Image (cartoon, rainbow over all chains, first blue to last red):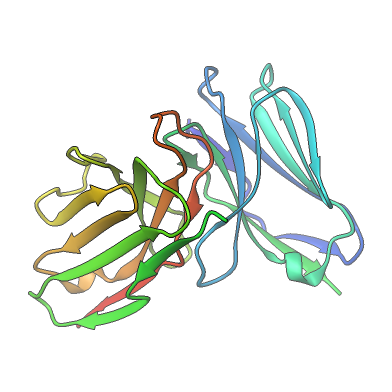
Length: 107
Length: 118
């Protein structure tokens, strides 16, 4: 089992809809969880981090963490075409990355 | 805040030569920096962890004698690809973790260096 797993996508959502991106991890002792966005040909940029169970909201983005079930998700409300990118889930201080989910927002 | 720069952004070199890539944290200090490599349509692959004042820690399968890392200050880490070959052509990205306490949290990425070896 991979340490961090994501569905590679592409995940297609219409403009204005909610995009839901999911990530599961294998190390039950993981403490730190991050979501990064990467546009094609560019380096990743940090969107959100979450350390505690529950939801964390920042603008249109909500990160959800469930340590018992070992998953972390990212919700993007009111999706915009500019949100089209690959979203990387990362776990822990040393940071193990998932392979990323490609999101396509259709105008 | 939390800006990381890389230089150069693109480099083309001939097979057998060496290339140095610099990673700088511009507005914060970073005890820890990471070096990644990313091939087209693949995820980031961690190559090594660079720690200021000590030897870098390399991931399994990464040749430390080929990818020399120096973290001489709290704002600068360098990666030197020695005796580069075409298969080393890739997108090299560094990241820096704010802080000097040894407790790492979020990391901030540089814009990347695209290396092409001909």
